[in-house]
Image 1 (cartoon, rainbow, N blue to C red):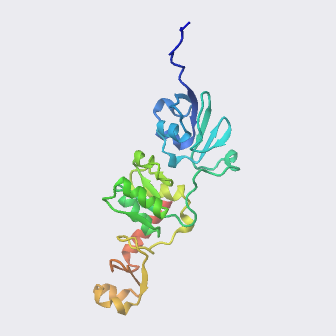
Image 2: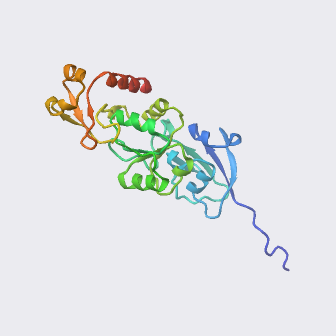
Length: 255
């Protein structure tokens, strides 16, 4: 009469399919194909997607059994889950992406390994917070408080619950990283080159030549007429040969 009591029920599982660059986060045997994964108890879409290796910040669309879903959707045995990044696709046009970036000109915060990228973003005029001693909790706090998009190559950082907006940076070199972020967030219309201090991230202000004359090298005094100053660190900027080199670096990265 007691036969079967205490038997363990069969484990629930679901079928997952990740599309486009989301496959980069999967183990090789799971890429570009549907695969089955066991479900944790009371598993949400966010939990299972990140258990597969994909940070939630990289996901724009989730469909469960063909219906739009969000990160909090509870998954059940036999469900089929399709996961898409933010990319143009005719079938996705009618659907709003999950956690779209904050409106207006994007603001960023870069982790300690992306100093070169932060400098290029500032060079292009984007408000980019960066210090080489940020820890994960401080990055998450600033991102949430100041509506900044987290830029990192640390997958675990992007999986933090408090980070809503972020991007995993695939490229290794700063110029390629910059081009990647420009494409992903469609930054070209927002470019305001040389409007921020490369050291402080503060917006520069125009100043008269006479007010900074005593701080200029002799050759600059003779040749330059336009100057900007950082109100925080007091660094002086002018459109000399270094501007041309930086302009070429921006153009090359975008191209």
